[in-house]
Length: 266
Image (cartoon, rainbow, N blue to C red; front, side, top):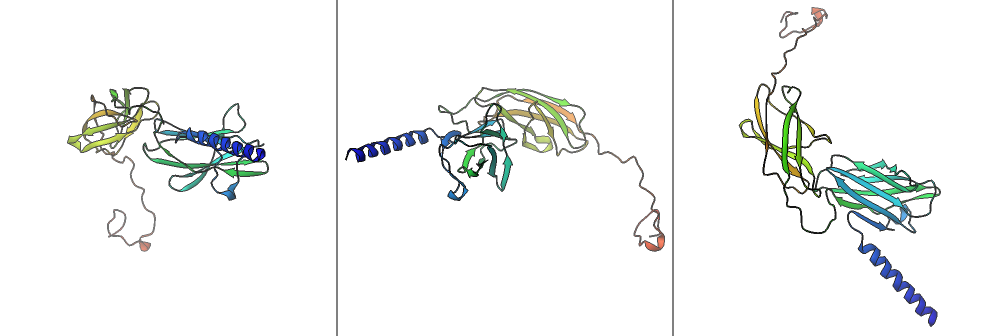
C-alpha cells in the first residue's frame, strides 16, 4: 500500500512539474519534448526554443537537451511552402543552433519545426507558429508614435527610381522599421518604404521627367505612424535615348520577308 501511495505521489509531482514547465512556454520561447510525429523520433529531456523579431528579421533558436553526439540541426519551414534550411551552431555550444530570416512581414505567421540529426538517429520537434513582431511582453500596448527625422536624396535619380536615406527615432520597445510616402500630385498614396540597416531605400516605379515632392512619415513595429513628416523633393531623369546604332543585317534579301526596313525592300 505504501509503495502504491509513493508511486501516486511521484506521478502527481511529475504532473504538476510538467504543468509548470508548460505554463511558462510562450509563442516566443519555451521547453518541450513534443515531436512532430512519433515516426520522426522522440525526445527524452527535450529541447529549448526561442523566436524573436528585430525590425523585420526573425531569429529562430533551438537547443537540444538530450545527451547526443554529433548533433546538427535543420529548420523545416512552411511559409507557405515546405523548405529545409540548415541552422548555424551557436559559438561556444555543442547542441544550440540558430537561423535568421530577413525581410519578414510584421503580423504574419511564421511556421517552423526543427530536425535534430545525431549519431544513431534523428528527432523532429513539434511545429511552432510565431507571429512576426511578437515580443511576448506583458503590459500596455505601445501607443507612442515615432518621430520622423530627415529624408535626403542619395546620388542622382534615374528615370524611374531614386535612392533615399531616411532617419527617425522611437522608443526601445517598438523600433522604427518602415516609412510611408505620399505625393498626391503624382499619385503616390501611402507607399510603404522599408530601409536596410543603414537607413537606405530605393524607391521604384516612378515616372520619367517628373518633379516629386514626397512627404514621408516613420512607422514603428507596433503600427504607430509619426505625427511629423519630412519632405524630400527631386526630379526624375528623362528616359535614356540609345546612343549606339543598331547593327546592319547581313542576311541575304532572298531569305527575308520585310514589312518595314531600312535594309530591305518592304
